[in-house]
Image (cartoon, rainbow, N blue to C red; front, side):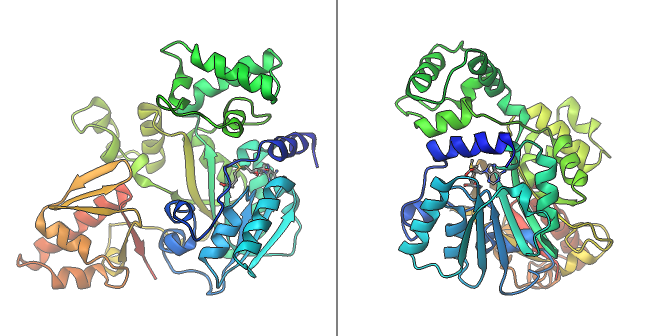
Length: 396
Ligand SMILES: C[S@@+](CC[C@H](N)C(=O)[O-])C[C@H]1O[C@@H](n2cnc3c(N)ncnc32)[C@H](O)[C@@H]1O
């Protein structure tokens, strides 16, 4: 194990994070949808259909609860959790025993040492881990080496846009030799109280009356190894590992259609820009993103996961609602930070998006207007919903 991994392991042995789930059948677990969990996001991970029924899933840097949570939600899958921290793995073992999880295997291991393993995984979930490695590129390469041919990697790394203030404070605390102990944590709390109003790290302070737990405080401000990525750096990380970028976890965070006023100067400058340039511009302009979550795959010529609305393929797509999309009544809907309303015809399109009906079948069943007109309405609607991240599409 390299010295960075040793220091990271020591941190997560002492300051166990994220806060462990106690009961996977309880409300807290139900409310915490694991990002990348195929129970909810199979259509997003594999638009063309999952590679097989009994999925082999790896939670790489599983932390306290992720591997057990995914094993609990996907009883037909076999799940492996690896992590540097014995303390985190001990909690995963507790959850496995509590819920009698027979489909979970746990191992203390450095992600980078997966390279050379004969095991193969259909899904690799790696959230909040690569940016703590000495060489994240090698970490992602190691993951790529154990990814099955049609497998998907769901990963999350920190985003530089919104974390700038954190790095100023990490640097400050490091220069002052602030340790990850009780007096160091107390000192950090004092400094946070005295932060100037304009300090970028204020984004990370909780609202009045809410206290950041010690382990989270260490994870944010006293981390021993931590870096962040711009959009372009994420794309370079993926291609540098020999992988292809499939898409963002939430398109809505990277599109001008959700993030930029059509009257603004930027809007028309983005006409004709590639999706990558648009994503970079939106990220730098809004400074919304604290993390980048994405899906990566092995490169393939036919790229069956690619979603597009030119040509005619889109008519065969079977739209699926994002699991967090909630109807509010009266044609109004919410998904996380996004709220929107739809006219009656588009409400019909949305309600018919059950993952089974194709768009052409939905068009045939909907409305009174003439065929070509209805088709154009549908195309514009489903493309918009894709850009905003409210719908996924099954292509196979
Ligand atoms: C912030 S936690 C995230 C845990 C989990 N992925 C989640 O999203 O809940 C980071 C975890 O990654 C583990 N980790 C960091 N570097 C690692 C490495 N090189 N190999 C294996 N685990 C690592 C840490 O021990 C810690 O448990």
